[in-house]
Amino acid sequence: MALTINEIRSARERISPYILRTPLLRMEMLDGYLGCKVYVKAECMQTTGAFKIRGAMNKALQLTPEQLKRGIVAASSGNHGRGISYAAKMLGARATIVMPRTSPQVKIESIRSLGAEVILCDAPERFRLAEQVCAERGATMVPPFNDEDIMAGQGTLGLEIMEQCPNTDIVIVPVSGGGLIGGVSTAIKAIAPSVRVWGAEPAAMPRYTRSLAAGEVVTVPYSSTVADALAAQTPGPKCFPYVQSNAYGFATVDDAYILKGMRLLLTEGKVLAEPSSCIGLGALLQGLIPVERDTRVCLLLSGGSVGIDQLRVLEDVAL
Amino acid sequence: MALTINEIRSARERISPYILRTPLLRMEMLDGYLGCKVYVKAECMQTTGAFKIRGAMNKALQLTPEQLKRGIVAASSGNHGRGISYAAKMLGARATIVMPRTSPQVKIESIRSLGAEVILCDAPERFRLAEQVCAERGATMVPPFNDEDIMAGQGTLGLEIMEQCPNTDIVIVPVSGGGLIGGVSTAIKAIAPSVRVWGAEPAAMPRYTRSLAAGEVVTVPYSSTVADALAAQTPGPKCFPYVQSNAYGFATVDDAYILKGMRLLLTEGKVLAEPSSCIGLGALLQGLIPVERDTRVCLLLSGGSVGIDQLRVLEDVAL
Image 1 (cartoon, rainbow over the protein chains, first blue to last red):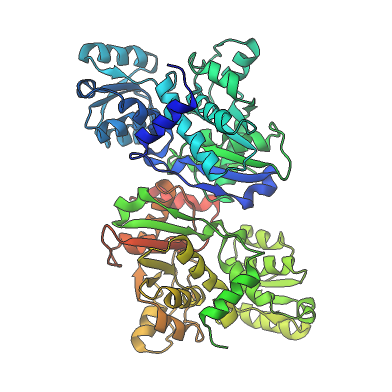
Image 2: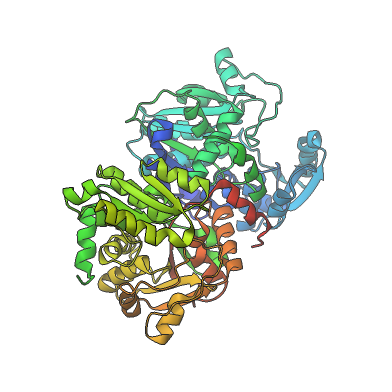
């Protein structure tokens, strides 16, 4: 299947009963800091706290009753696992989430509270173990990003952004494996080709910037970053061509600017999003995306999974 | 002057070029916690971080050029001072804010950054000192709440709430001296008389609950509360009759529930508001306002003045 605007529109019809249409907010208070007219798509307010539910629901809603009965499986320590667990719960299916035993307790509990089975393992084992569970039970593995149905689900955010903020000039999307920007850039290129969709990835793991320069999928070494949800080492091979065709540019953002962005969003914008989601603010603060005072920039805040104790790190961040 | 819907509509015309129309958000994620359909009027995202700018602008815009030249004065350690400073800056007037020397440095700096002169003094001295400054300079004192023009400015929030959420059943308003609820309840009673406007005040300082029971303005002893912006000991005598006529009921909320509400709003709703603004969530969590699952409840989040270091207190708050 090729991903087109039609698949994204179908995904929207499929998933809309299960997800929230999150607000898109004009944030005048941030204009002076970021040097442009600031809008945020507050997907951090989505059910389960992140956009991942969109792709997960789009995938799960296309399984047969027999497949749902055998269950769905994901290897994930975060938002993807929660999206899958929620989708399974909505559809009366069994979800099994394979997580590193080093995952924060709050993430483990939030997945269990959705009724999913959690299997803890050593981090490098998790994909192999998830495949083993699928093989034993005849269950369906749901990948986090490298899948057209997942991209189509995430792409529904592109439709919403263009409906809620039709005059936007730029959309900035946090990037890891590329499921989100693959879907969003494909949607926006189809309906508003003059809008520039930028990807923002951690400077510590510039897998898209490197791959785009090389013209092919390149793997970068694992490196620690505050943007812990953006830690894919390799672009999804199925995502890469869509990003190559439809994204306008990429910014590689330093951790210090990501945290500045998070602090700015929270203390001046009054919105809480996880560090990974604040990378677009970081890109603007670091001067990596050219804008002018009248440029309308929509920042996609992809998730809000952040524990209250994680906010201490912001105390020492200067704006 | 008597406060009517006409004064509130005039105030809106006057102040709208200077203030933001803040978003009103549907917060499905909070429905299960609060037992109703939750909406928030996110006035914490207002210019200067609080609703106070509305009344301040409405007052300042009615001064003569000569009065503006002699300056405006307020005794305030918080949002009122910032509102006055911003209004003065917009109109090219001089603002003098008399603050207790115990005020947090961040509040002093934020007022200075708006170009206002700050006079520090012992807390009990601040009103006397502000009056002295007015007398010496022929400047105009702007009261925080006990004034029809101030109430008319705050009442513009009632107009916006009913436009942005016309089907709401209940509006919950944080209460201190009564400027905000005086204006908001007067506006809503005029345009949607079946909507129930509740006031929420700290259990530690129930000045409205006591005064309404007594049928006259009563002073309560000063008491410490986490809702530090709701610390008036006495209802404004000019506010009281409007609240008496137009508010439906009052809730006196314990500090523990105010903090629970703040934590809930931040971690589940992803919105940051100051403790005082979260008293409406606290009232619902404490079961003080009768609601059913289908009741539409709009919580007025009156301000967002909270330092990042103040969030630590939420770490030990259980939901």
